[in-house]
Length: 453
Image 1 (tube, helix red, strand yellow):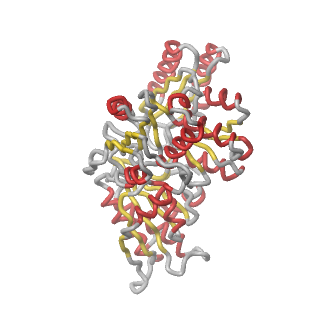
Image 2 (cartoon, one colour):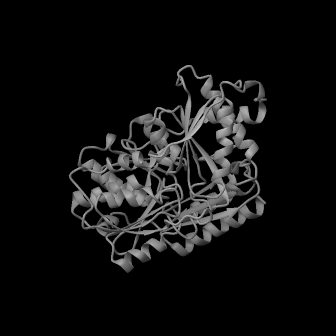
Image 3 (spheres, one colour):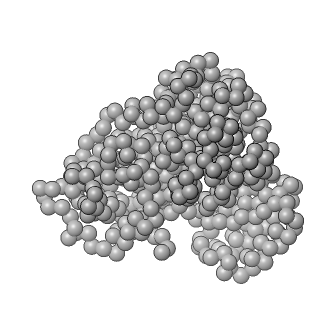
């Protein structure tokens, strides 16, 4: 079934434009509320936990969702700004029927989105997304509303952030602390601007904080995981031991070693996988990555007897693969890292603490661990498009792709995919010659721009 509201990671669009309008958002709340109310194993007093990041439109979305849920008889507990993984944790910890995050993740402030977690703390399945879409777009919900004496109530939960901070700290080995470490922490003016500094400070680190002054408009603005240069410069300026850069909803992290070099998701996966294997704690000696991860990850994992399983892009697909086969470590090059024993989705703070635990356990600086992977040159071009057509049916696409693959002579690859949240085609080319693969990527991007606009 073709998705009409949901993309790769929930519903996302420019705030106050379809489908992120109050009317549609209200119906999303009603649809979810209806599914909860008809669930035979729901709570006697059904409840949903709602958190958000710091963008201005979060207030509007929060009120519309709350009204929709209340109108179906569902109680709502509002926790305010909190990272996406925090809502996954609270949905399960507080025995809620669902959890909702209001965030557009790494997107600029004018966008917003909705991510939904089930009572188990994991993102809802595609089948539930389909049912919500059917209820919102094809169903008259008025006859399903609760009667006047059964509408839900809403209240704010003041200690939610504290619960989540304790949960994150519990993922760090008790025999270690962060005393003596100087850490640069960029919160992207987003959802973690309070909780992330508290985590690292309470564990004993000296924390130099960036991006902790949200104003509704500056989330992800030239800061955070998409702009790690601010973090890397601060690491060098303050002679820090490492840098941690989160995105707007803190479900992803990009780090920096003490030399100011970027440590992306592939590097974090590699160092964590090797460490866990040495401890005998990597199930089936397997790590899960996506098609966007660099070929160098496969190479270094192979050298250490670790298998790499690849999925479609999107942390929910990584989690699905992990849960299906019993794996506990997976993630994306972009910084979504999932330690399934600790979190139900990507968690930037948990991932950073695990990297520090590897440093402590190995006695190595982050630069030495960062050198584990020698990346194959990789070029990624995002091309704006108007239509998302099946590429296999696009005249000329297969011929061009085959030509590029032949020219790479088995020393690289080309991957073309559509963004699940924006009107973009992403062209990824890997190979030994950076100038050459740049030309290949530009050739494919120009072809798509011409034929999909």
